[in-house]
Image (tube, helix red, strand yellow):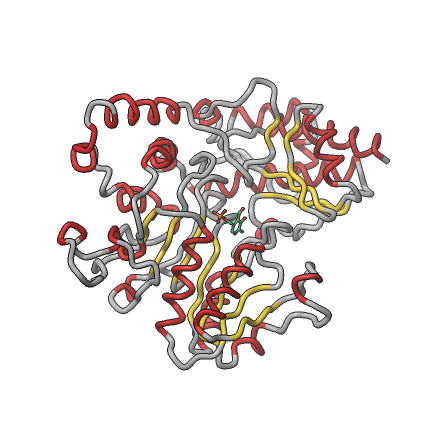
Length: 417
Ligand SMILES: Cc1ncc(COP(=O)(O)O)c(C=O)c1O
């Protein structure tokens, strides 16, 4: 059972002592010890870069000193280097709600999006457009436009589009309008700015009803709450491992491809690691029968070592309990800030079920606020022009931390005026 604030219960937790009691009873009371975090730091930036797990350094060191220095090239087989992208995909699968043979860990989200969007578009010949949200992370928009241009397709922007420069003078289309004749729809499950969460199952069904394929960006979902990609009939997904999954700076991203597409799908970076017989050195490309076909070239094994150390711990995390704990922390923070700084506007959906694991607040000078908070040992981040993001990560953030952070945020906001 997770000790948490519960609906309407944030008031009860609003003393530091009550917060400490909730923490003592929490399912995640011990998981904080998994991590290396500077003493006294209130880290609310885990949706940007998660902290290292204690074994990350050891795992990288072992790779350097044992596998590389001693094993040398033999380690491609003896230490399982060749299969790391698939092996880590297996460790990631439960976090995605997917079968273990539908996920491969490789490259960055941007590179994977290029591969996946092109691959998906090739599955629906005759369709005219790739649809992407006007508010999507810029890389998603850029890559979608690039793939569309390469394949002679239109790019259609949907949604309100807070980024007017990206959208131009017209508001984005509604999804239904954009879907007419479209082949592929790229959607951000959780908005990187506001934390607004889409209904993955419902929107996938809508996309399918129009004969298109749904590609999901899970950067702000994976490791924040449970996912059910197979049950929800997603076609493809990409996401990173350096945020909630604590894989480290530059940790490899992942591709999910639904099994029903694997035989027919072909991605455009047809490198030898995705070949059916990489050591056949054959004149022509023949894709591996499985999800390995989404690989391109040699993976950065040092980065995989740190990620593996974290993913092994993630096997012990119950994602339903994690989401409940995140909700408790976010309700506490929202209640404390609403009371202490009523002028600070919450931009995230007020209903926790409709958001990811961070809260976004509007502030005129977000960078100044974030710098002033850093001086008080609270790490948050700013998204221009006017947002501050505060991530709630129950594996290493407690109610008392949220309580202390809220106090310092309120003081800083009032000082900045
Ligand atoms: C929602 C979202 N999509 C895509 C990206 C880009 O990821 P990458 O740098 O791995 O290409 C980010 C990076 O933070 C992101 O937040």
